[in-house]
Length: 347
Ligand SMILES: *[C@@H]1O[C@H](CO)[C@@H](O)[C@H](O)[C@H]1NC(C)=O
Ligand SMILES: *[C@@H]1O[C@H](CO)[C@@H](O)[C@H](O)[C@H]1NC(C)=O
Ligand SMILES: *[C@@H]1O[C@H](CO)[C@@H](O)[C@H](O)[C@H]1NC(C)=O
Image 1 (cartoon, rainbow, N blue to C red):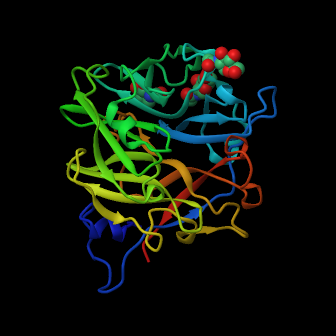
Image 2 (cartoon, rainbow, N blue to C red; image 1 turned 30 degrees about the horizontal axis):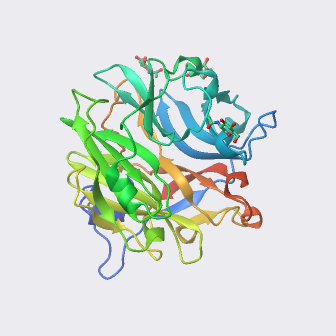
């Protein structure tokens, strides 16, 4: 069966034989698993597994995530997990990356990608600044280097616009000539810096604001950007809805520099929100929070810094969710778990 995802077709992202019926908006639709990955019961007393980045290579899923607990400046660290079957993901060992060169201290919200020219895996994360660590082997958790920062200090434009927010969720994607570093401020701004592919990771420019919203909750955090075809990009950003629950909005552009055009960006027509996700039985979460589309790679389609996703196949989105009964109290102590959305054909 050939899937045609109508909202992507409508946006010109994929060539579809037939468009959406006149007058009927096409939309993303998903089905969700229950929680698949949670903390180990060990001396670390991790409360939540969060902020996953995921890549599938030769049939193995490699997931990097934040471990969160309510312990001040020792609240956030990174973990690596691999597995071949999501049904068995929760059995996979957790490799804590504070045991590698990444070291202890505040590190959160990773993104992993292969930089083909450097022949290195990069892990991008927040540590108060925007940081990276490298490793020639994705499955060697001890092999990560000490973090290095992209910026000398928090950029002035962030300080000027951040209000009561936090500077979070760094994301790198490259095109043929440049690498771009995105970040958010929990205050309605999407920032982007760039450097040349040849100079990366050095030389990041002062950020500019690529997207902003006077409603800070509409453009909150967890931005990710993918290439969805030659010269076509898709941007996802996490928002907080009128129901105070997390969901994802989406945009497209012909360039990583924008301008970004709405794809599915409202509560009624979201990228992923509880109202376009089908759960088995009672929904285990009302929040579709910080997540990533699974990038799929094989020997024929090796990974690189262009972050391609194939929209002719059902997208899969690994996200953090939360038992609605436990959605109160200290944010860092919330029991976030990872679960998987799989796209179903447009209505
Ligand atoms: C973390 O907080 C403790 C207690 O406030 C302090 O002693 C320590 O220096 C802090 N560590 C870092 C890395 O900031
Ligand atoms: C999964 O991780 C373990 C531990 O780092 C590693 O030894 C193993 O090679 C990895 N598996 C694959 C298929 O990458
Ligand atoms: C995937 O398989 C190809 C071909 O066997 C190999 O060259 C490549 O190193 C593998 N990638 C990883 C990350 O295991």
